[in-house]
Image 1 (cartoon, one colour):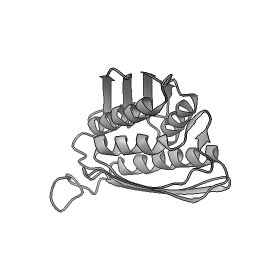
Image 2 (cartoon, one colour; image 1 turned 90 degrees about the horizontal axis):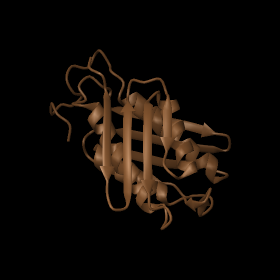
Image 3 (cartoon, rainbow, N blue to C red; image 1 turned 120 degrees about the horizontal axis):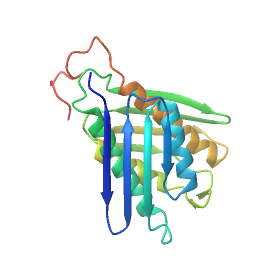
Image 4 (cartoon, one colour; image 1 turned 180 degrees about the horizontal axis):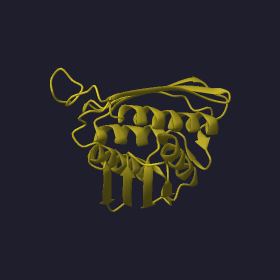
Length: 197
């Protein structure tokens, strides 16, 4: 099987972002987004999904974090899609119910080629660290659109924002790891159409 590694660079007037991901890694990461809490979330994502991940981002965070969060989703989504290739032999679906102390979240996804985000999350407070917690929705929406992923994120219980978003990113990592895992029983892609989307 070929290496599932992709490197994407995207530069706009608002952001300059590069992402390299290895879907068959060991959880090593180097993440510098200019948003410390997002660095923490993406480091967790790499560790718990066993993805090797390198991210460097420079954005206009002096305006706010919106452009950087949105564009991080775009570039990471592109990288996941490219690394996944034709998706032959993978399980396609992944899910995780994950506890994080008082928090409980469900993440389920399908690498179907059809983008959709179904995000049932109510932040406990408007801010997490020093930025708007609603921007996580923008990140996942952009990622799904570029990756062709159907993603459900549901909050069942939460006591504070750090645990809520840490739980979401860990569950997302575990679900994506499951979906991109090869199954020897699968010949070609797991679809009666013979293709995704």
